[in-house]
Amino acid sequence: MSKILVIEDTQSLRKDIIEMLSYEGFNVRGAEDGIKGVESAREFMPDLIICDILMPGLDGYGVLAELKKDSGITTTPFIFLTAKADKSDMRKGMEMGAYDYLTKPFSASELIAAVHTQLQKRDALKRLSDKRLEDLRENIILALPHEIRTPLTSILGFSDIIATDCDTREAEQIAEMAQYINAAGSRLYRLTENYLAYAQLEAMTTSPEWKEILQTYTTSDPGIIVQDTALQKAQDMQRESDLTLKIEANVPLLVLPDHLKKIVEELIDNALKFSRWGTSVTVTTELNSQNRYCIHVLDHGRGMTPEQISAIGAYMQFERKWFEQQGLGLGLIITRRLSELYGGETTIESVPDQFTRVSVMLPVA
Image 1 (spheres, rainbow, N blue to C red):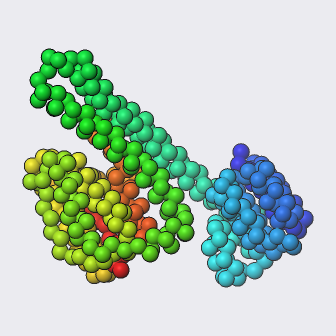
Image 2: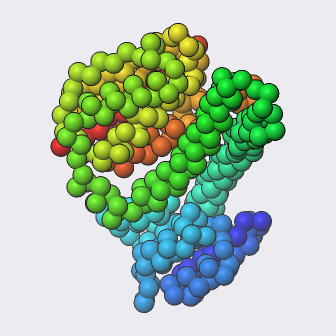
Image 3: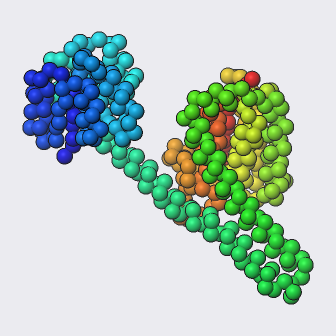
């Protein structure tokens, strides 16, 4: 049974609305002014709020603004009641987060229709949110044990051999095992760094102060950073011969140099990781028609479907149940978050089993 809170200072109207909604099977509670309405909302935790705009003391806008501060109620559908069909009032309410308006006087059928519409939308959003949460949970459950266990197994296994059997091993064998240990440690280190980077970015994107500070930084020679970072990543993965660089633009950017380096690292890592050895990976830079600095990374690997591209997000590693993958799906979302932090954007074009082109557009200084 859905719970509805009615905040209306006119007693007769409040009573009528409560009766109409109760007759429809809803659990309804009333409040006679804005202050009591806010208190009732926090106690009652309704699925929908119906609120008059013009009330003494705290008006409807004030109620909405106050409830938006409460994380438990901020997404609750809000229907305003107004005595006049003033477009400026409607626009103000919608900008603040109201979902719908009912102009007095309204009929029972209009009220019920508006309530059902908003509750249906709420249910649809909840189902979508629940699905995304379940996808996230499933991907974490599938990815995390693999990501931690695999490199740890290498570290423990090879170090145990070296510790217990080094006297019978050739120096070359020990050196090779040491390289495996180093590679596994590097993988764990990268995993940890990406976790920390993602957490920091999530905090930054919600902080106006951080955005203001970051806008004061510039990268004077982005071409060198793109070139050196791409080459280093290709060398680390023993794919130098597969990498092609076309650095055709080099202008100062409104981006922190370390963040530009991180963007390129993740783009190249993703392209090399999901393409086969011997297939080309091409990195191109250019100024587009909007005077944005563009970094394009093209690979000819597995590719993605439109559905996979639209669903891309943290920890979303597609087809992990069928394909062995590395990384928790943080790379592209870190790239996207970083570009958005500076007012840029990230786009993805892909055809399964043919190619993937990831493009990052960044502001010029």
